[in-house]
Each structure stands twice: as structure tokens, then as C-alpha cells.
Amino acid sequence: MKFTDHVYEKYKTDWRQNHQHPFIIEMGQGTLGVEKFRFYMVQDYLYLIDYAKLFALGAVKAQDLKTMGKFAALLDATMNEEMALHRKYAEQFGISETELEQAEPSPITLAYTHYMLHAAQNGPLSHLVAALLPCMWSYWDIGKELNLIPGAADHELYGEWIRMYSSEEFGALARWCMELMDELAEGVSEQEWARLEDIFLNTTRFEYMFWDMAYHQSMWPSNN
Ligand SMILES: Cc1ncc(C[n+]2csc(CCO)c2C)c(N)n1
Image 1 (cartoon, rainbow, N blue to C red):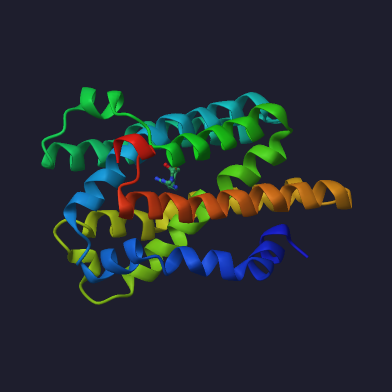
Image 2 (image 1 turned 30 degrees about the horizontal axis):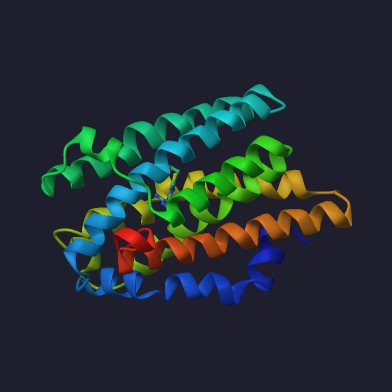
């Protein structure tokens, strides 16, 4: 069985929990408080800076030029398309680029990005891909689901987010990551397969924690 089919079936409950988080539900209904979205955008910008480094590490660890080129393209797309969307949103909120870059990361942002970078730096390419996969795949899955809600993609604030992540262009990137994961997991030992599952489950759960952190605007206990 393909790794992605296997983990989807095995961790369906965790996966669906992300879709059912109030942040997502309210974004789909267009009722999400702007301050929660604003908090999310700033933290997500910091997240993306580290995430982009994951793609750079992917280029370093790639075993062939085609894969290396794809990671380089993903790095470019993250810095110049996805982060551009964040900069545009930030501008609407009156936040400058410098403020974005210099914002303080929340404990969950730190934990999530550091966990991914640890897996990427200390393991083979398969660990790196297992760490980044839930992020790509679940955003696409969530984007498509929100796009089915009548009018959601036209919402003046959340519409652009929904349109971007449900797009076919983004879907192609997510599918590429899924296929690469399946290739890298093929034929690995039982122990290594379990390790990949573990990393996948951890970052799937971190996705939930990230929505929850944004919804509650959670920082360190002392400055909440
Ligand atoms: C917490 C969090 N998780 C996932 C994504 C989605 N995402 C991050 S990088 C990337 C690759 C293409 O640019 C995608 C889809 C996000 N923004 N924030």
C-alpha cells in the first residue's frame, strides 16, 4: 500500500480534526474574527521563513537533479508567492514587512518549525518529506473543502486564502510531495516506515496546534 493511502486511513481522526477546528469552520463561514486572522498571518509568516529553509535542505539532500530543481522551485514559490500573499494581507492590516519579520514567534510556531528542521537536518530526505507533507497536503485538502461552501471563495478577506490553497496550481505541488513521499517510503524497513509515520503524525498534530494557537492568540504564559 502507498504510504499516503496508509497514513490517511490510519490517522483520519487526527486529519479530520484539523478541518473541524473553529478557525477553519469560521473562515469558511466568513465569521472568523479579524484579530485571529491577523495573528495567524504574522505567525505564519515566521513559520514560512523556516519552512522555506526546509525546501532549501531538500535541494541539498535530493539524489537527482529533477528533485533538486523541484525543491528549488518550491523555495521560490514559498518566498515569492505564498509569502507575498502574507505581505499583502499584512499591508491591509497596517503591518510593515519589517514588523512581520521581527515579530516574536509563539511557542507553537517555534516548536513546530524547530521540530521540522530537526527532522530535516538529522535524517534522510524521507524524514524531511514526511515532516513537510501534512502542511502541503492538509492546506490543499482544507482549501478544497472551504471552496465548496457557496460564497466562501468570494469573501473579501478570506476569499484569497481559499482561492490560493484550493487552486489546481497548488494542488499540483501537494500531489508532487505526496508522490515523492510514496517513492521514498517504498521498500523501507518496518522500523523506518514506523519512523516516517511518527513524523507525519507529529506534524499533522502540529497543524492542529497551529490553528489553535492562532484562534486563541496564544503566546508565552507571561505575555498572554
Ligand atoms: C502552519 C502552516 N502550515 C502549512 C502551510 C502551507 N504551506 C506552507 S509552505 C507551502 C508550500 C508552498 O508555498 C504551503 C502550502 C502554512 N502556510 N502554514
